[in-house]
Amino acid sequence: MELTKYSDIIEKQEDKFDVEKEEALRLITDPNVVVLDVRTPEEIAEVPSLVEDPLNINYYDEDFESKIEELNREGEYLVVCRSGNRSMRTCFMMEAKGFKKLYNLKDGMDGCNA
Image 1 (cartoon, rainbow, N blue to C red):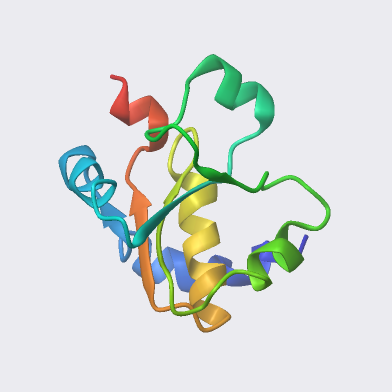
Image 2 (image 1 turned 135 degrees about the horizontal axis):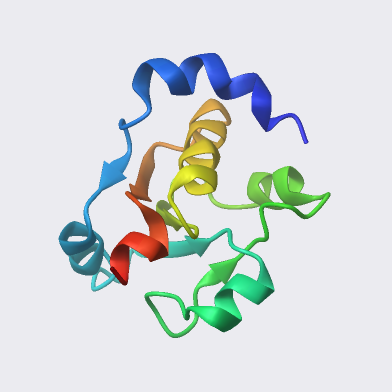
């Protein structure tokens, strides 16, 4: 996966998409916001998502980037993972692909459950 090519951008603006738990909980009540969970199935089994039926695209799947490209670029996405790192990288990758309305759950599901 070529997501490492976004590393330079991420270092300069790593908190660009971050939202705290309280804001994330507000966002999930908006029917226009899609919760995109990029965790593995094992991680989801350990700690359920913020919503009952999130869109799950495993960050480690070989076709991760092509699955992201199939999503509506006009949509609004709250991206979550275990610690906030993969979801942050996903936000930067999505932005580079033309997505505009992106939020990253700062500190991920670990932070949400702390």
